[in-house]
Length: 298
Image (cartoon, rainbow, N blue to C red; front, side, top):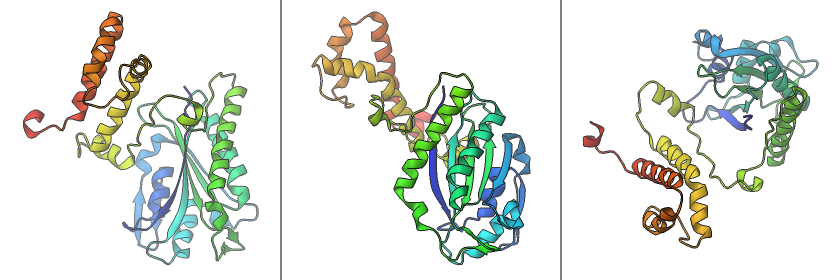
């Protein structure tokens, strides 16, 4: 099933003094030296998860803009503030129904049309996680245009306009659907929110890269964010039954308190299979809503 995702965010030094060199090295699965901090970031060991990477630049860009190390070191050197904004990043889900080459070409063509023609320099990296799920592309973009042999003195503020992001979301959905159609696939994506699509489902909270990595390393067992994601998933499973009960006038809400008692009459009238499903979902939901004490962990 094709999934729509276009996430845009600003990468800055704020709070943790982050290096855009480290970010670029990680996303491209390579080794880069941060000349400002005299530190080398080596992520070449994760190259298996990075299938392709390339830099796209506007016509007439200097040679340094086409090499990852010199490009991002120039970005770092151009920003003096300790909390400076360094780059804009887009994270795009690419259809798993397409080949890796087609996925990368899809993202590269979109980036060229939507970002590079506006003046951005963009580094594109295609990632395929080890679990085989969620193939995606990272696009790391400059916040300044190329001006001769250096970056422009001012950052184009129009790139931050919310209308630009809305248009980019629409154009990415259109690009994905066009690629799927050309490949003879019936799957389609939709950039609109679940509410605007008329889908009766709660949006799942994002877990985030940091918490995912911490859980994978065993640093955390079950964070509040992970509990919340699980709770929303269970509620979405139960949603058809909840709506059926509401339509019958049995309840007007599905809070943790009276939901089960007030719905028992309707459940008793339902088929045995539906009853089992509701009970299982409810028991799982109640279980995730309780904090596990020290004794329960054992």
